[in-house]
Length: 387
Ligand SMILES: *Cc1c(COP(=O)(O)O)cnc(C)c1O
Image (cartoon, rainbow, N blue to C red; front, side, top):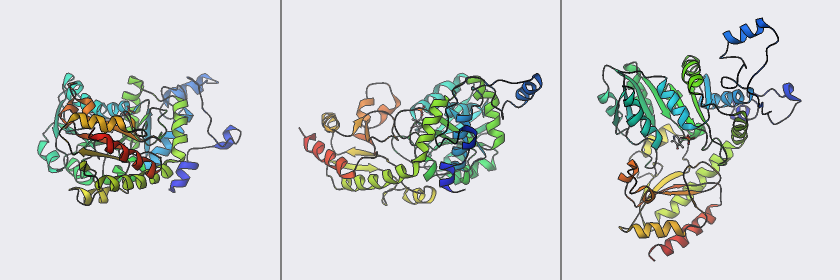
């Protein structure tokens, strides 16, 4: 399917709404039936029909169709946040007595799910270093039902060999779930590498404007219908029609934004490589990175996140550098128009598992600004770093 078709036409039926170019926001909680017989039909086919917006809604459906097509899966289901999508995908696969193998440093709240919530319900979790696929196989037991991946993963951007982990899973009849948020649905498609369920925080690249939250799970029809009839309908973390509309709007420019971000990021990284204040850049797209070949193999392009390690042993200098940046905003999240930093130093003293990261690490996200504008900002902040 052509990317342009997916983003501009798929799932849209303009004749059904006055030939409006932009899709309608069907802001309704319920849909009326004309006859008892029709209602009977609706109740029997609740997964396919518009009956109640906690189940299906036409604006949300449109988004799901497009994202499923982008990920190359049969189906997708949208949630009110990325973490709701992560939780639903994981819960759909486990029951008390089961065992999960998860990468060691997933997104913060995924970490919470794995370390705190699942054990409460009798699900055992082993966290492994995902850079060696064999660790998944070696941690597997009789009762292992799920491998959980995130590639690249949060903050330090290690990769997993997705095809290899998926192959180990298939040999053992284990389901695989991956959080693909960092790669975007344009630059990495894990379903084609054998992964069963692909999750995104749509809040990030898909929304792209830092003004909406959402999540999505992509997979085959059987798995998505299973999630629909259980976790989705029961947990009720639905995406509102208006938010679906914002995400649809974000999708229109996704390729433009991703290409721009990829290019600017390469320029900013090249600048940072020349700076003595930067001891290391954690970014799998540098040829000297141990996972460079794997990055090239399983991702189509780089995205906008990387982490630098400042060449200092003084947290004050880290603070001074970060505080001096005028155009990089200091904030959580990423994927919007605005460039961001997230200093590991801010997570220190919190009992946060990220406190194990050195305070010299700063995560960057490169947005849509001009590279020269960003580089100039970095330049003046480096000049102030030493005080
Ligand atoms: C932000 C993020 C999430 C959670 O998404 P929300 O939309 O904030 O709920 C999950 N995974 C990754 C990798 C993220 O960056």
